[in-house]
Image (tube, rainbow, N blue to C red; front, top):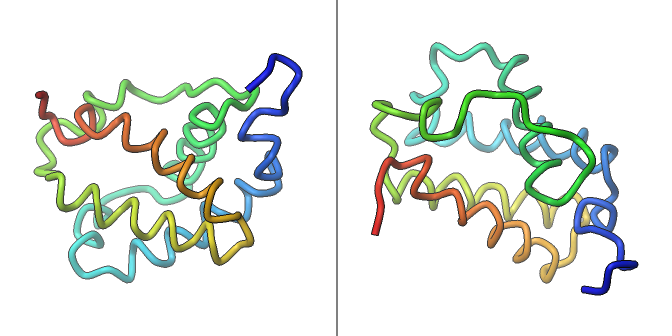
Length: 124
């Protein structure tokens, strides 16, 4: 990508896309019986806000993520790579449902997958 090329954030539609993505994504995640228990005691408004920042940052947007470091926020929650794969699968499906191209959805998932070890507390 050249320095003058738009960021993935801009190509996806910026804040408007993220504003559509986050609530639609969490409808899926909360409907998943394997993932739903992770959110049982979570303030969803706060989570949505943090996710908006995180997805904007992860896709090259102008927003800075202000939440706890991912490893700290997810430590001790028992999140496995299987859980993370379910999470990103729902994310990919949601991206496609809101009109993101397969290529761009794959790019988003690749970026999110780079955080797997922080979220699951594992390393290679």
